[in-house]
Every structure is written in structure tokens, then in C-alpha cells.
Length: 281
Figure (cartoon, rainbow, N blue to C red):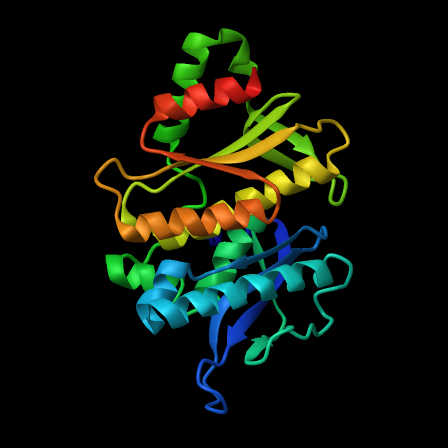
């Protein structure tokens, strides 16, 4: 009797961690970011620990300063590795920041590659959330389908001609690999994501940064479609907004704005759908 093994994912990628030494000369380094590059040259540099978590760990003021410094280093790393192989050793622009060793693995896509890099390199990232929630399963790569279905229903009820714009895939020049977008018309593109509860913030951070990267690639590198406006439509919990959610939305808004993208956050799929109609009309 022959053994049957699951097929390995077909997307090869490599990654390096971005680390900080909070206490000078201590030798204790903590991974707060990751640089992921696919074998097809797709590149994603992103935080793996949110600003609210950094404030909890290091205090409000020091945590905020670390988050700002991390953003600067991520921007620098993205620019460097967009034209250099990941095997090159990049030097962070700030003291007490370091780049980790090169690692390689396989995944379904670069988004899952970032999740894998986060889980395998950062004790404060997704692994922290899994410990907190008592789950040992991998974080979901896709956003909750209920959010997307609710938006789609409202949009198609009010503008039936928009039906064919949902779940559209287009190739980008760098890789030729099709990227799928929640909504894509000639002048407007959107990705959807959702925070259904505050304990999910870490995994939403990983997903959302990947989706912002996809929108950035679409706008700058697509040979077929060049939408005038690209944004992330984010669902937030419908209970009273906590300071942690508010800080997280602020952080994502910054990540979007540095790429000249938009962020629209709301508790209501109706509001999200009508916002989408207004932008896409």
C-alpha cells in the first residue's frame, strides 16, 4: 500500500526578517517586520506586529516611536529590494535595526508567504495571537466572505451592471501572475477585508498590507487597466469602537497613504457598497 501525501504549494519565495534591538548592546533582537520576495520577483515588505501591540509591549510613547521607525525601515527595504535580489544584504537606515538571514519556503501566493514568514520569524506576531486565542491553526489568508457577499448584494441590487466587476483577475508586468481584486472597473479598484473582533487585528494586519501592495502593483504595473482610484474597504466591529481598533485603522490609513491609496472603514456593508458605487460610477 503506497502512502499518499498532500501536494506541496507551487509558489516559491524567500524572506528576511526586520529586527530591532530595543535595549542597546543587549544582543536581544525582536522581529517586527518581514521582506518577502517570490521566485517570480513579486516583492512585499510589511509589518508583522501592529502599532497597538507595540504600544502594549513598550508603552504608548516608546511603542509609537518604534512603529514610526519601523515604517521608515520598511519603506527603505522595499525600495532597495525592488531592484536588488533578496540574497543581497540590505543595511537599515536607522541604528538598532537589523536584517535577518535569508530563508526560503513555498506557499500558495505571496500573501500566504508573508503569513508564513510572520509565524516563523516573530514571537510577537501571529504566533502571539494564536497563543492568545488558544488556536494552533494557521491564520486565514482571505477575509471573511460574509463581508464581501453583503457588499456585492447591495451593489448589484442598486447597480446590476456592476456585477461583472467583482472578483476580477489581471496580470501585472513584473511577474505576469494574475492578481485577483474584490472589485475592479476601468476607473476604480478595491480590495475588501474585515476585523470581526479585536483579537484578529494581527492577522488582518498581515492580510491588509498584502492587499494594499496588490492595489499598488495594479495601479503602477498593469498593462491592461489603470484605475484612477484604488482603496481598501475595511469592516470594523459594530460594537463601540475600541482604542485598539481606532489605532489600527489609523495605522492602516498611514500604510495606504504612503502608497497614495485610500482606506474606507465602516461597520456597515451598506455604507461600504454605496461608497463603492459613488467611486466607481
